[in-house]
Image 1 (cartoon, rainbow, N blue to C red):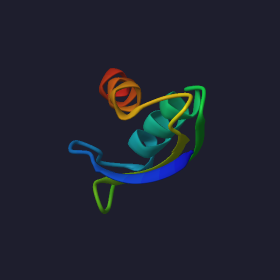
Image 2: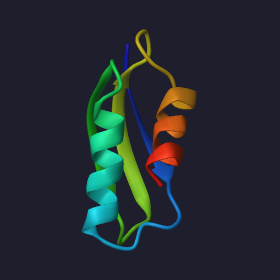
Image 3: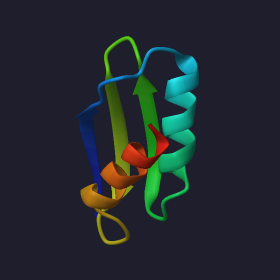
Length: 65
């Protein structure tokens, strides 16, 4: 089942931050799309909940930061 969630991410200050987070989360099996915005401090993630979960996505974001 494909889900989409908007996450609030503090600490992104530039497009480089966006790219780093997007690259990290894209590597997770089941993530179909991610769009991070340092201007809004958000990331919109679409993922297959049968292949991954919010905890794995959160961990990838934390590790990328």
